[in-house]
Structures are given as structure tokens and as C-alpha cells.
Image 1 (cartoon, rainbow, N blue to C red):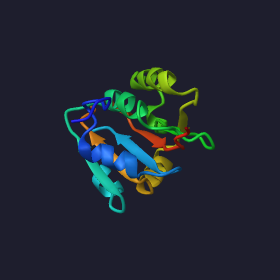
Image 2 (cartoon, one colour; image 1 turned 90 degrees about the horizontal axis):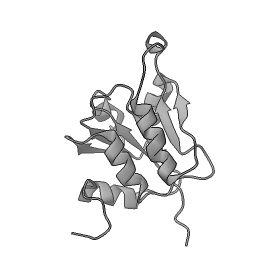
Image 3 (spheres, one colour; image 1 turned 30 degrees about the horizontal axis):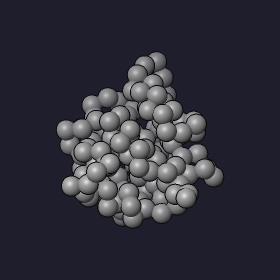
Image 4 (cartoon, one colour; image 1 turned 45 degrees about the horizontal axis):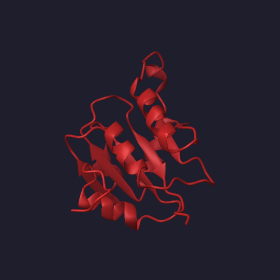
Length: 143
């Protein structure tokens, strides 16, 4: 065991976060996300039983975000879902605000899937909220 590492961060996830370099991306995905097919050319991690908000908060406590490009991206609602309320986005914004001033970018649904296929890793969760997918772009640790 280590001190200072949130207990929700598994050893496998910690290893992946450490391996990632500047500009690499990780997808935090809800339970409906096609993680296995998106991660065919990357790393698939599991965090079953956990939700995206608590993982987002724990990861952002360790993970520097990119300062040269938008570092946080959400999957935008499909046109047919425009009327749906997505309360988890407010949770994401509140969590992100604790760690960064960077805004959350919205990416069209199919473009989000394509970007997820190029991510360094996909972290599948047990999150049941819809549109609870977020991409994090790693930045640089500064001394």
C-alpha cells in the first residue's frame, strides 16, 4: 500500500496513469460505453462497482492536465436526446473546477467514439448515468 493514493485507484490504473505521457488520453466510460471494442488497440481497464465522478476526482488529484489543448472532453448528446437533462455533467464540472480552470469541451457522439479508439486507455466503470463519458488529456508535471 502507498500513502496519498486514493483507494479507488487500482494498481493497474496507477501504472497506466504513470506510463502515460504528455498528450496521451484516457477515457472514463460509463457502463454502456463500448469499451472493449474501442480499446482494441489500447489498454482496457475495469472499475466495476465504481462511478465515473469518484474516479474522475481521484484521478485528477494525481493527473496533470494538458495546458496546450482542451484537456477535458464530454460526449455530446445525440440530436434525438437534446431534451434530456444530464445531471452528471454538473457533477463533472464541479469536480473539474476543484482541480483546474479548464472548461469541459463537448464532442459530437461519433467523433467521441473515434477519439476514444485512439486513447491510450479506456477505463470501464459501473456508472449507470447516461452520457457519463469523459476523456482526459494528460499534461506535464512541473517542478
